[in-house]
Image 1: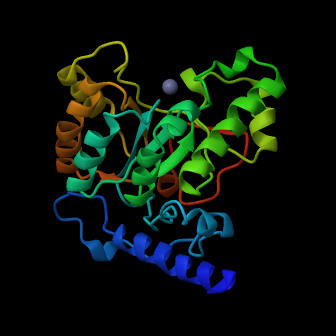
Image 2 (image 1 turned 30 degrees about the vertical axis):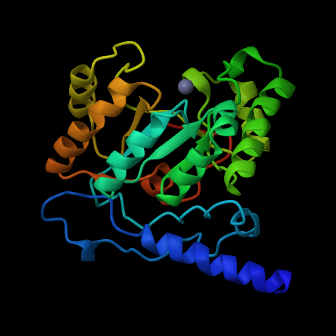
Image 3 (image 1 turned 90 degrees about the horizontal axis):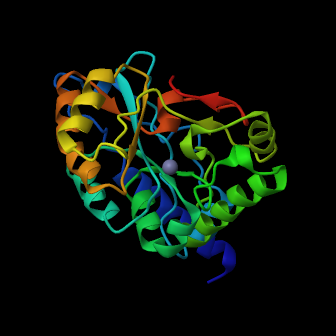
Amino acid sequence: MSVRQALVRRGAAAVAVAAACGAVSTMAPGLAAGKLDLAAGRHGAPQQAQLLGAQRGPAAAPPRKINCAKVKCIALTFDDGPVSGTDKLLKILAKRHVRATFFLVGQNAKAHPDLVRKELAAGHEVGNHSYTHADLTRLSSAGIKSEITKTQTAIRKASGFTPHLLRPPYGSTNSRVAAVTKRLGMPQIIWAVDPLDWRDRNSATVERRVIKAARPGYIVLMHDIHPTTVNAVPTILSRLAAKGYVFVTVSELFGRPLKPGKTYAHR
Ligand SMILES: [Zn+2]
């Protein structure tokens, strides 16, 4: 088989993965699937890098076209993994056909490449959360760049996918971080809801805070490294779905290209 034929074959496999992940992440009663345009999305053609990466794992599913100006969208995000407990969360999300966004710490991605591939194969979005969970505002421009690019490399080596989004650790950013991320072509994604799940390791508390603070278009911060948070997710999904929310990835929430260097907390 020629290299070109191999690429085409892998491309077909990537499209099949995307189609398999095309089910809408909603349990919202009365939300007709017909209202949502489930076309392959603006990134319909998998990029060459993703095709090459398919040797090691599935390409990332393209964002679904969901009009979050009309649909009650919310983006759940999980930081600091992947860790062994991430697998349990992936099962919870898969059971309910929910897509989320995972912001990975590079050294954890390197340690758990199988989980990076699983996240992408399930249709979740994967973003960059630095290599060592450093406060980027305390680093030089070169240091910031190193934290980000080492993580891009770890995720690409694990899965063939290179993230587009950065979440600065602690949501800590400044003009220097903005300048570096602008040069690297990455928007900064922070959040509108923080249940402080890292501090209060109590599932009921996390559930209550997320459900109370949720609004359409919001990005919710959680951490899949804490079992108490993972255990809060089923109730969060059920309660928000009952209120009509549709669970989308960060890219789906915005549905348009985001500006590199700029900070986003909600739609
Ligand atoms: Zn973090």
